[in-house]
Image 1 (cartoon, one colour):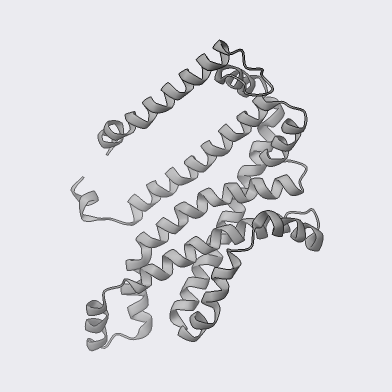
Image 2 (cartoon, rainbow, N blue to C red):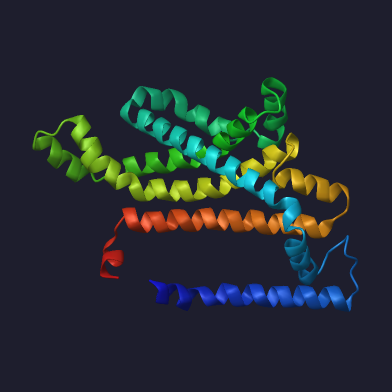
Length: 254
């Protein structure tokens, strides 16, 4: 597995290094002002020197993202299971799920602050709204793609609906579940940052707002760097968990 990662992963790393080198060279060659577009070296220096200023903001965003992700994932799984087991609910509520994703979060978030104040509740609601939908849709697709022949065979063998669900449909939906979880993990960080933009006293979104208002573009890029890194870390952890939980024939050969 490690050999495959090293074999396939060097290309994007090389491209990223080349982009950083071109960025650094262009910043020096064209004498671009720091407030407009800082060089990567300046961003790196600020990331190290300013650690004491933003480390608690980073910790607040991590905590908020994880809480929202856990709650949003739980809601998404419960909704998917309920819609799958109760077809009447699916027919009635599925269109509303689609409609809920057409409401811009950037518009809804201020209303949540008005309704629920500046505490943690509106932030959790924002993250839950952006997380539950991809999980619900992914799990429902996993249930739908369950082999009809296997299901018919279990029914002929006398299995009830509960046994069919736990022994066939749920295991079959696990790959789809992890696909939804990986998408939701990145969305949770985005949702946390958006909620911090609109009403918070800490967090990377709040830190970015202060940095941009004072024209500290280097700090804005530092925040972006840590936000992207956090999203990738969440994605990698879930990919690792998927490999441990869901075993494919190709993985078993490894």
